[in-house]
Length: 199
Image (cartoon, rainbow, N blue to C red; front, side):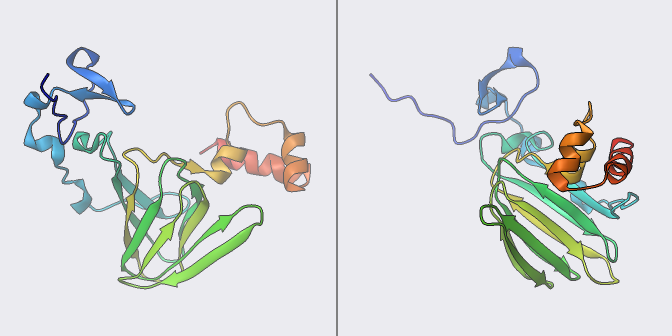
């Protein structure tokens, strides 16, 4: 019996008639892979920060770059206007390693039981790690724009933005749950739900 050699890579393919299912995505026959499935050029484009938080994250994951399939990595470019942020969120499937390319960021993550904040001000060239599944944020504390890159230890790390998940779910979470959980007045909960559901 000869050894069966596994390919060094597998490329994601959308059509389930043309691949096998591995690690959450369909894999293309390695003999059919082309070089452009390992290439993406969109990070040179100017990112629009025309949103409420004035930041833009451009994610390059397996859904954008098919060659990432089964490799366990992805990349994001973050652009912030002055005094704006990437709101508290988690990546349930990946650790994030962030490097600041220009500007100054206040970053942090919170552990649970006990709730402890780890925070640091990062300047150009500084690197910070956000462990998998922990709530974290990035905030531009300066007047000038910030550009940062993040490597993530998953081909599809997912993103759950805390406020959107809690106050913007459809259908809405029972307001009594939110009032008790966050110790807020009913009017504040209604206001927050209105803000996040509209987004």
